[in-house]
Length: 334
Ligand SMILES: O=C[C@H](O)[C@H](O)[C@H](O)COP(=O)(O)O
Image (cartoon, rainbow, N blue to C red; front, side, top):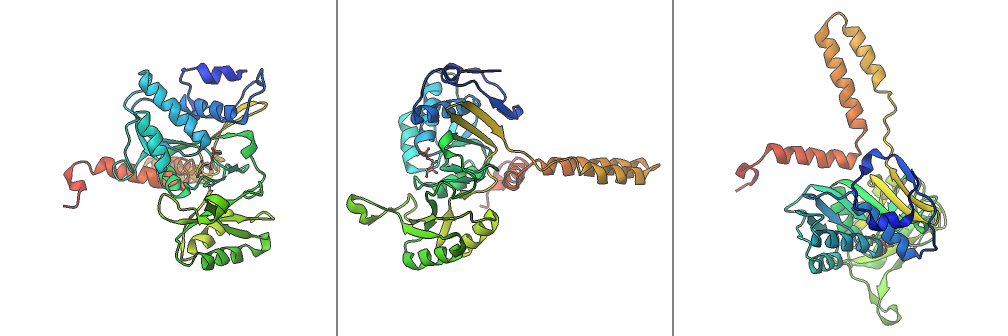
């Protein structure tokens, strides 16, 4: 179905995003600015927010539109009973001014859905985030989210992480930051890595300090760094590093607003039906004993279910299960 841009700005209808593998909209009827594209992506994401949800509220110029829209829908009564978990002091302030009820991960360790922007998105929906400095809180909130919708304009799409030639941020402790910077560069000499301390103020003379009191080293690469999980492990093994801005295998849905329209893409699962083979073999080996056959079916179905979840989702669901099971005061230690 072809949908023009104004639809995204006006529609309040709730469609089930997670049943749509891919939706391509018709080209816009007029030229839109980059900020308008960000707003279009943000408003589209908010269409999938439901009353009663605990929401991760992202940071940045794209996420800001989503937070504004949530505030607007709460005010008009189209949404109610929302709890927001902000990913930065800035978003906290924005949401507070909009009257969005807020909480934190201590009180709400399981989040229904997070909506946030990104600096880069690769073809596998891996992200670079943190050019606005909020990567640590964003990663904490978004790994605790059952669904993570990433909203971007088309300029954020890259062939590989680092492919924009712009920064991949790493949050580090201030102590001996030059030492940590050198260690980071040494990890990626093959990719021509150059690290720079992020600064601000007149002439850039002052180190930028994150909401957590840390510094940021921006890494720039000449080439593809290859295996992202190996790169992530190597960075996180360095003492002095707090977190990096690669969000690997975290996004569950991507909404891109570009000049040719809006696309919605859900994370593909690894499930290709291969689990069914051992299941069928196990069932037939159990014949004529029905209990063994039934156990095989259960095993196969469990494998299929597990394959459909990302590792971070598995953790979230495990915690959710424990939370539901351990209701009441016994949950508290004293
Ligand atoms: O720290 C900032 C966040 O990771 C932002 O979500 C990211 O930088 C994208 O920001 P923007 O929507 O302003 O392009």
